[in-house]
Length: 335
Ligand code: PMP
Figure 1 (cartoon, rainbow, N blue to C red):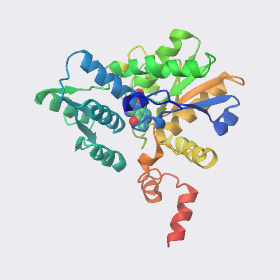
Figure 2: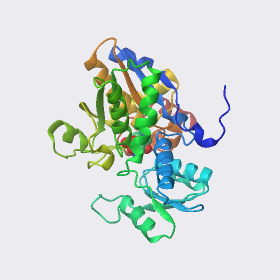
Figure 3: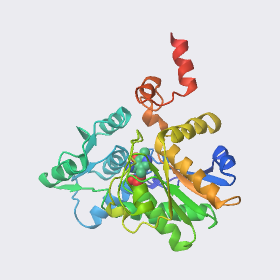
Figure 4: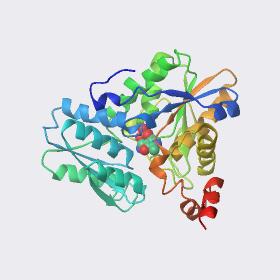
């Protein structure tokens, strides 16, 4: 056991766990990077730290300054904790469709929270444009701009990819994950390929996102929808430019939820839906690469962030999604 000198040193260096059920299903070794073990309980702490440090290095942040960001929530939580540890203020703009737990967490951390109606990216009221305007109009404020600021993917080139390489002693054969900003897939992809260009990088895209079609057919096009938070991109963000993606899978919410349920009941992991979609993608790549291969994916955040949605029978029913049987049983006992 070691003592770390400060909270921010707790970001990254997360464990890699072998996932038994997914490994059996794929016929090879599937590993999950435990990003829920970060202090803000998600993979986005890494990007938040790199974005804030980058703004400091560029001389954009004065002591007591403000960081403004538009986010599905996890980046906001990461930025709020980094800002608190460094003496900055945080303003977060979030679509009102995101989980109540994320909003409550942001308020609890002392961030100023502004919620806006969900809108297409082309609408000036979209949360990203709203956050940019607030930053421009506020003295001493910096816009984190996680989608196009490549300090985001640099976090994954320098930390996540390095850790995955070292944790597998350089024997990793493939990496799979979904994209929100694309920072994780692009950064890990670039970092791993710099060490071994034969490592396969695969995108697990939810329904409703446009990237599957882009990487398969060269054109951005989306179909259907997903309730997964934090993933599902409709454009090539700055972070996704030149991302070394070899192959892509489209994963349904039902398939992702099945792995969320199995990982919870069989392996004791309580995760969010993007993690389930990632694991389903990792199994697909594992089946392609065959026995003996080692595939890693990202366990992006904790399921405790979705108790009122993914782990709530009424909410699941309202979205026409299957209800985890043990949630039904609990409801019966209460009656
Ligand atoms: N899963 C969750 C729960 C997230 O919040 C995010 C970040 N938006 C992602 C996955 C995707 O990460 P990235 O932004 O690096 O593509």
